[in-house]
Length: 103
Length: 100
Image (cartoon, rainbow over all chains, first blue to last red):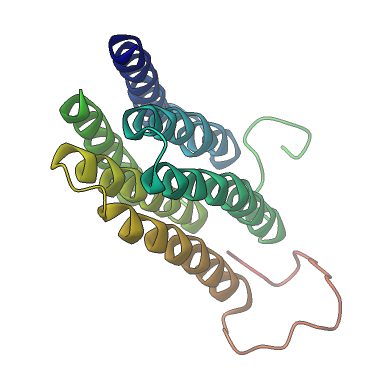
């Protein structure tokens, strides 16, 4: 059982690391700001969620797991809010997308 | 495996910092700094597990709070050029006259 939990934890940590790296590369490779919101959202939700899930499997049922759950819930609440606020502020500041109707 | 996750988080932080340095618009920089802050939350959590001291999670939780409030404050400052401006007259986001 411990071995199974360890294996699942490795799996989640590895998948989260890969998602983080893909998001980081995409943040540098995407053509314009509105496209860059997408890899930033990937690292903020998918990467963070998978890594916190892997850590939670290592922690077991304890206060540490509750804190990890709190961090997860808070990131899930605030990260899309911050992304939405950034996109809306960029739109209000007349930053046009590179590809689309506005060009 | 915690070391692997730590290295991945550090590499992502370096990539986000590169985008924050070369970002053409101010919003690219804000987005990159927001990503950097979220990765800092993850880094503190993973480092706590790596060093066998999960008490670091408290610091991580506080950093998540500060990161969100800081991002929204910087966005408000960029948009209105003033953090004390009253914005109760309606959400009129007319792009005229505001050059980001």
